[in-house]
Every structure is written in structure tokens, then in C-alpha cells.
Image (cartoon, rainbow, N blue to C red):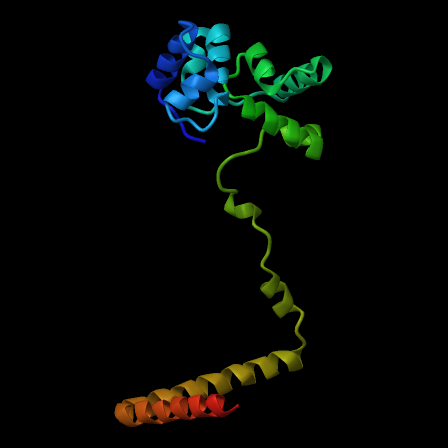
Length: 187
């Protein structure tokens, strides 16, 4: 959904209130995909004045009780999201829709304020690898150490061969690469 400037909102609301054009005509005139935003702006303006058209600079955090009151009002009266937003001086009906969805999925627990930011380092879970390593028997530890030494030895041999003759090393691997390609072509 596009975000519109306050000036644009005011212009459309005053044009609607002057009575020259309806919601659909205004939406067509200004190449808007839907008339819904204009309807919302007009209702917000009628209930809250200019404050209803302003975009909030910071996110306001609402208490769980406020969210519950809003949801309860909507359920009891059968009011739409827009009507509920007007009743509770909210300029964003989709916020109520989100609260309603969360309430249906997680009940009251989902409406509680969540802590923001990165969790502290002390609360990080212990790494699974460290747990697994501690469970190894002495024999398994020695086998693991042997495997690591074999890998290190193979790496050092290849490094020494490369340093002694870099061109031969490249030729050897180039030939291997070409022979692998030929094998794949015939398979």
C-alpha cells in the first residue's frame, strides 16, 4: 500500500467534503487503485480532525487491556475495523486487524508487549556441538584426532607440491577436470 503525504490526504478530504466528487471519482481522478484510503481518511478527519490524517513518527505501544477493549468492542458491536479505529482514536485500522488475528491465534499471550532488540549474550543456549564433543568416549576422541591429523597431513603435502612446482600442480588438476568432463559426456 502506498504511503501518502499529509498534504495529499488533506487535499482529497477537503475536496470530498466540498461535495464536488465522491470517493470513487476522487480515486479515479488521482489514479489510486482503491477508494478505501479516501474513505478511511474522511472518517479519521471527521472523528479526530487533522490529527487523524497525520502519520505517526514513532510507534505507540498499546497496553494489553487497551487491545482487549478494542477487540471486545468490535466483537460485541459488530463494528468494522474502520469504525473501531474511529471509536478508539486510532488512525490505522489494519493495526486492529493484526491484534484480532493475533488474539485468535495466541489468545491474550499474543497481545502482550514483546521485548525489543537483540537478546543478551548470557541467555544464549549452549552450542549442541560442545555437548556432543563432551559425550565422546576416549576411543572416539582418538579416532577423531587421527582423522584430523590425516587431513592436515594431506593438506600440507598438496601445499608443498604446489610450492615446488605450481605449473605442474595446475596441469594435473586441469587434466583431472577435463577427464571428469569426458566421463560425464559418455555416461
